[in-house]
Amino acid sequence: MLKHMIAGAALALSTFALSMPAQAQGETIESEIITGFEPFPPPDGEIRFEDGTTATLRDYPGELVLATVWFTTCPNCQVEMPDLSELSRILDEQGIDNIRVLPISIDEFVFRESPDDAMKRVRKYYDRKNLDHLPVAVDVGAYNAGLFFNPDPVGTPTTFFIAPTGNVIGVLQGWKIDWTSEASVAYLRALVGA
Image (tube, rainbow, N blue to C red; front, side, top):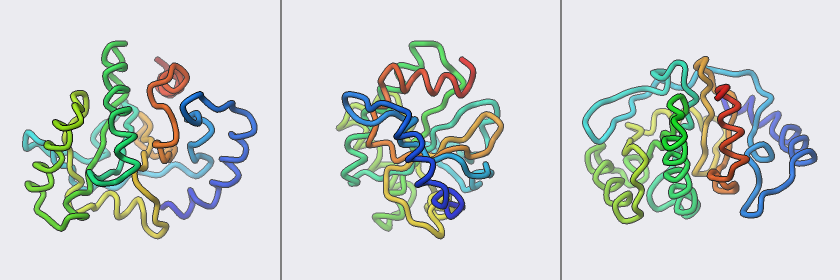
């Protein structure tokens, strides 16, 4: 799947880079997002939540889902996860309920442990970092990440933009940008017409 995205990435990034100014704390979403590929349905692998419920990335029609693949010892994730938690808080405060920030941990795969152990690891990380506005979710067997990253490996964290129509429309290695800036929030709101 990513093969189609990566093929157009250089053109998309260079086009956006020429037209969008950089933010003070990093690049803008528009300057870093990879678009210009044929939208496609996300994988349907199981995502397990802390409360025991499960879902797939296809279970959120009508919402913009920011599905971020990450793991607890990823250096760049250390930067992005607090920003994503703050973004989720901002969206809640603004009453935006059709944008879902959904980090899906691949700790189970990285540490070769059970989904339950991975869930405990993620919970400890959230508690340590005060990530109060994010769901604790594990990508069971790293199925979703495996399909997203095959055949072209991509580093973590990587966020896949799943449109309200249900298809992946963009990809972003988000640690380079400020998720909480007014410009970033406005861009996300524009994607859902809010």
